[in-house]
Length: 385
Image (tube, rainbow, N blue to C red; front, side, top):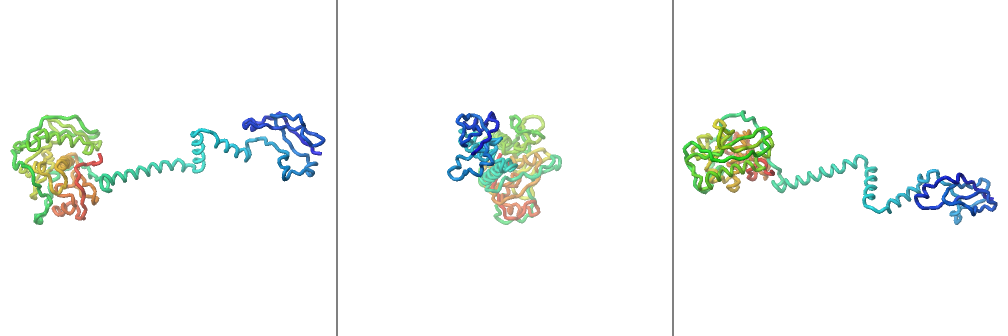
């Protein structure tokens, strides 16, 4: 005879409530070992075989489905329950739930690396994008620097003077050669007049707001290249360009036409330029004369440009302005071509060449090495803007 013992028939069945199942509770002491026909549904008991009858009962093979069961006190704490929960989770609709489950598993598996990995991916993407951008804008060589900024009171006199050289230049040396082109003024009167006009402040000017005037030497005829106002507009447009010096938030510019400016941007005839810039070699160039507070722009170069620059006349004029104003704001030293095939630094003497060897031939004791590097012309301090 099989005897069954039922425990607390009123114990609630949370598991069956969740999953819609029904549990059969048996009543014990059936003489024939059968279940009580009056069994109640909806409550659970603990069903165990009597030890005396266990040996007489075979639950193997086909009788496995009729084995007596032992209910768990915590029906959710079982492998079967975990399996059923996973199946239920997989069957729940909604992409958001699935994504949250995946995120939990990812974090559980990788720990802190789950948070570090997205950051590393973003950094890698930025590096790749930056490298591609550099290749697209400067031949894979990056953006040139502008050199070291010196205090404005660090040096007086002429800044950006042409190299002294040794006076022994090879015949036909292209460096500094003047292209064919329109007429220019050989000698002016040595005085200047201010071109009327002002501008609003451009640039952040966090450290210094530079004021400037635009001036033309008396005796210089500007009609051939648009007149005085055209020249002044070129200056204003260049200095207000984001690729110019205002890219540096320390600087700002404002044009005035009265009072005392920080410097005077002055278009100047050949002879006066030679006098104010102190030529030691017969090459037309511009300079910044800090004693005069004057950015001296060679009218010869404004009209003709430079063969060694290898660029158009408009770009050369932008370079002419930016290079000499660079001296005025504190970039006193010249620079060599740093990366072969890259953009030339704006403080390189591009009037004399964009090859280091050409400039080194003019000034063997200068800062430019004879190393065979050649840059591409560049009129801007910050060519990416």
